[in-house]
Amino acid sequence: MKLLLVVCPPYREVEGLLKVTEVVRKALRGSITALCVRSEIAQKYYSPFSIQLGKVDKEEEKRIFEEITRVLGNDVMKLSRGGELVSQVLDEIEKGGYDMLIYADVDSKLTKKIAEYSHVPTLIYRRGERLSSFLVCTDGSEHSLRAARFAGKLAGPIGARITLLSVARSEGERSQAEEAVRKAREALSGVYAGQVEEAVRVGGVRETILEEGRQHDLLALAPRGLSKLERVVLGHISLHILERAENNILLVR
Image (cartoon, rainbow, N blue to C red; front, side):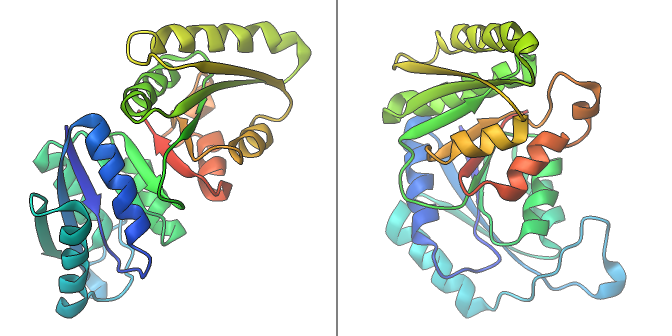
């Protein structure tokens, strides 16, 4: 697999991100390209994607690349570009044929923009150096089953535990949530051999996911769900979780 690691804008605590990236690389047997974008365009050339966070000077860029080499080794390809950050990231994903994007949540607007338009599985790093426990959210849709399968491929090689969560809005919908969990377990069967825990809850979907997620290192979900309203670019439930969860987030379309 080809993994694109975005290492800009600069931030002080880069080591946790790099260690998690190494875990992902080993699990997926992937190669890593590290991209640093120096924002150097004038205001009048801004596009709808534009988020300007200041220039990355060459010394800072050099320091980040040196840290990447120290943690991830010499076989990481390093790219440096000037321009608007989000559009450069999306352009590189498209042209480079990547299978996954990894970046740190250092700015909420940046995170939302990339999450909305990235069409590859996207890991948004927020905390920690380990991925030992996954909460996989499912509603039975094909999108959510695809997220479960990808999470299983990642969790298996690193020995991470998986909990499948489906939330019913009322007791009358409990059977649907149970069926969603059953489908997700079946989806995992071919890619994940570890123990799977099941959690069927009744209540508010967003609040329940956030509460359950506090017990896990990574929260995996599909940006689109069953309802028509959630088939927009980024569903309202996914957006709510993205904005408020403290976990590392894995979005899989």
